[in-house]
Image (cartoon, rainbow, N blue to C red; front, side, top):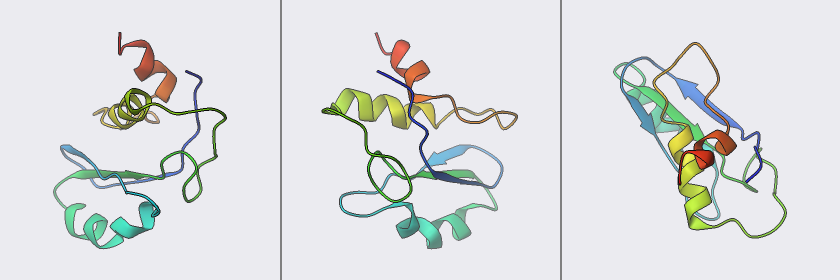
Length: 93
């Protein structure tokens, strides 16, 4: 799996909460929750592949790849960007 630069919002401090949108939405659907949770949590809301401001990727994206991408956003580190989905996928096996 190749790395994909996904658009995302990242607000707040504390334990990580990752909010994933469904089809056909994008991360903007989580705006009220971002505001409500940011005082107690680090809240990350990505645009999944092909939605919102994230690029469409060629080929079929498997559920395992989507799960790995989502897991990559749950890193507790604030000092760097979330890891690329490719690095999470490498650890999947």
